[in-house]
Structure formats: structure tokens, C-alpha cells
Length: 419
Image 1: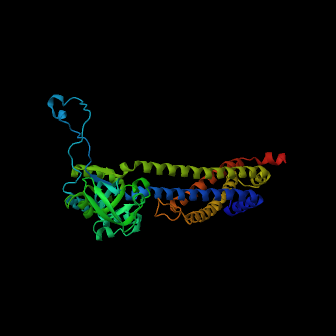
Image 2: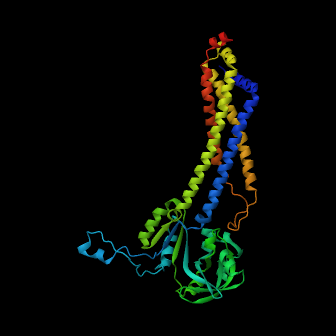
Image 3: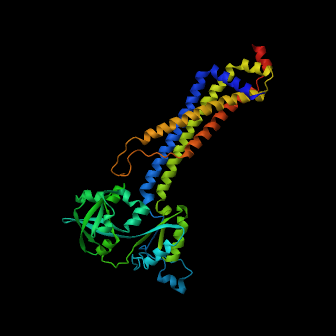
């Protein structure tokens, strides 16, 4: 049977029940619009939350960990080498925090084709002096330009200019929480005491807000030169080497490789932030589950409408089959009705989904803990729209196939005799 005639018949049947057809199409439209909006919003939220930590975390971190020695004297004894030796109250060995030969290690890493960039760092405990009160804190000595380039440091300096750390000697950028507690602002002088007891007056040239309030109550930043002067160490002192890779997925493998190569402790980003990745995965699964459920519900609506249409048009189906239409032709008619509803609903759903996403993206959002966020986050990934369209077509096809199969088996003799 010619496709033109089948299309004309399908169109006539849809017009005969145009209100129900429109309701089914609106159901698909609503489902797809919510699906792409929900997925875009949840993925945008995931990217935002992950970015708070992951974008500022090195893919691989090299450092000297302070921990008990894995090899104890009893393990070296031939008499006990084949035994499991249990030793309690093992104290850490004398191991310095400084990375030995750090400059050569940095050069070696920079020549590695898998490495995007390297940023040396010094991390140590300090006290912020407020009269007779000493506020516990952590100072981070940075290579300022590399930190801004690799870890978006400049995005979180909400007051002042981060580059002043390099040009102004004895300067410091303090966390927003620290600034609130000691009532300090830009251009003030704060007194910082190193772990060794030395006190230094440092000029506040900026305020930093990471979005993690507990961290902002403790941390501050200075140049490598200022930090070395504060700690009273030599000009080559480095406690951490931060590595940004071109491919994040190879971080665990490279961490093991660098640990063995440089005889240092290494931590990869997947290990350091496993809980954040788990949270993102769970939120994505929930979003997909809700969106797919909406599409399935709309499919049941189409199924019910086509079932009612077949029941009401039994005589029409009988006449079609009596005049030469095969069962496969009848099946094609009803499947085409279902797919037409799916296509119309998918097209309308994509349009409304984009408009809803743009609307959410324009809503102002302001939080002291998220200084870089102005509006609610939305991810406009094309994959969400592709998944929505494909799943909508699959749902509507299945919703039309079962009634179409039923219609194709109608016996015209029984229907006409009953009439």
C-alpha cells in the first residue's frame, strides 16, 4: 500500500481525536522539557560543586608524608623474617617535610609530555596573632603565576590583586574567615607567628574565599620567598609539588610511577576526592532516573489514547481491511500516529527545555561561599537533548506498537457482522 494513502489515513484518525492527540503530544513535550532542564541543572550543579574542590586540587601531589616507618628493626632480623611481627606505639621516624632536590624534580616533570604544568608549594602551620589570642592557621607559599594558571587561584581572590604577592614583599592574602575573626581588611598589617616562634608583620593585599568556610577560617597565601623568610628556611625549600596532567584519568597510574621514581609520597586526585565523585555520580543517576520516568509516563498516556482510538474505530479498521488493506498496513498507520505524536512532542519539548534552562540560568544566585557564581548553574550539553529525543522516540514507538499489533489482527468479518 502506498505510503501516501497510509499517511492520509493516519492524519484523518488523528484529526478525529485531535484533543486526545494534543494531550498526548503535550505530555511528551512536558516530559522532554523537564528531562533536559533537570539534567542540565543537575549536571551544572555537579560541575559547580566539583569545581570548588577538583579544579583547585592537583592531579598528582608529591610530598613527604610524616608516618611510622614501614620497616622496623625486628623485620631486619633473620630470626623473625618469616613471622608476622606486631609492634605497638610505633613513632614516626625522623623525616623532613622538605622535598630534597626539588628544583631538579620540577624540571624533570616539566619535560614530561603527559604533564600540563607544575606548581611548587610550601605548606606549614602558623598562628595569626590577635592581641593575647593566637589563631591557628595554615600558610601556603605559592608560585603565584603557576597557581593562577593551573588552579584558578585568581578567581577566588575577591578583594585585592593576587599578583601583588609577587611584587610586594612581606605580603599576604588571608581567607575570608580569618579576615572576619581578626577584623582585618586590605592594606592592614597582621602579625603572623611561624611554628618555630618567629613573628613577622605582613601586609594584607587580598582576601580569598574558596567556598569552604572551615578552610577559609584557617588558610592564607604568600609568595614562596615570603613564606621561606617566615619559616626561616633556605631558598630552595619546597614541601609540595603540585602536578596538573593533560589527562586526568591517568593520575592514579602516574602517582605510582612518580612515587617510585622520586622516592616521595604521591597522592592522586581520584583518591583525594573520591567522595565528591561519588556524590556527583549519585546525583546524575537520580536525575536520569527521574527524567526517564517522566518519558515512560508519557508513553503510557500515548498507549491509552491509541487503545481508545482503536476501540472506537474498530469499524473503520474493518472497512480498511475489507477493502484490501493488509494487517501490516494497519500496523503502520497506528505506529505512524504514535511516532508523529513523539516527533511533535520531542520538537516542542526541546524548545521549551531550552527556554526553561535559559530562564533558570538567568535567575540571580548569590552566596558568600560561592563568590564566582552569579546565577544558577546550567549545563547545555547536547548529549541531554540527544538522549531525550532518542528515548522519546523509543517510548512512543513501543506505546504505539502494542495497540497497532492489536489493530492489525482485527477480523473484519466479525466486526461487520456485529454491526
